[in-house]
Image (spheres, rainbow, N blue to C red):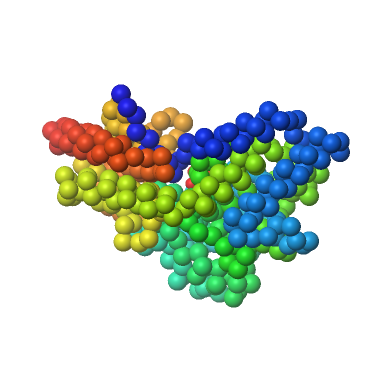
Length: 388
Ligand SMILES: Cc1ncc(COP(=O)(O)O)c(C=O)c1O
């Protein structure tokens, strides 16, 4: 059975060109960039070169004294944790209700330590109500210390109003952290004049390796370390730097940026083909967030009168891989906090699946997916009706 991978918001397949570059590095070690000998100096040069290259693809210079910095982390979760816990140690945190669990769980933990959290709502189509931000900050008796917003939502793909948020934060003199895990490598970014203070990203979302990511910091923005140890990365992130992974991340980002125009067109075409193909057969499907700008390859579709977990498993049996939200270790998945915040009807929250295409997806795969999804939907929908 041919398998079709449509879960590219969760992770992407590594680009073979990236894997080859990394293999060369793994085989041409040892690579400890902190060692003083010739091997170490060679690794340092490779690491610094890769970090500067990443900076240039993000539109920021990383080689200036007291300028912007890039902390290499293990990925989006760690970068988000470091930003939320390390950029400020007092004052209110302002977040949207649709942030990734890595942000929400950290905020919940900080709340238990006594920090105040204030929330931005979203509209019914998944766009953060940035119009509430200025009032939220002005009316905050505790003093807002940090605003954290995602650049695009990982469930609906809805692109969020980051430049408006940055403008308000700059006016109010409050740092803005952006979780750009879903947009780096997919949407153009020019950090140098963005008004953003800190930005999270991770390589495995743009066909790079898992286990490496970054927390970019604007000039003069300081962050506390998450843990303590050696002096690497100016003591803000101790531990031996994973040189080959960083080189892989730089290569993946280079390819993503250079090929962005064609990838975007390809993903949009396939995403629209999938949505239109399904809607032609089932006119009552609901595509979440489609009135707003969305990530090129992301589609969250509600299959009314079905249960998303049963749909997901039935699709897996016929070779279609998609997602039903953030599955927990028991294999079940709690109702989506994103769709709940969007105040979607229960029937949609219960039945929404996420599909994500990538540059490696093909028209043939999408056509197979349309047939399979449609058949499974007909089968499960009829079953639910009979059972009820
Ligand atoms: C918006 C967002 N933030 C953070 C993360 C966490 O990234 P990582 O898997 O690299 O820890 C993800 C991954 O699903 C994400 O989609």
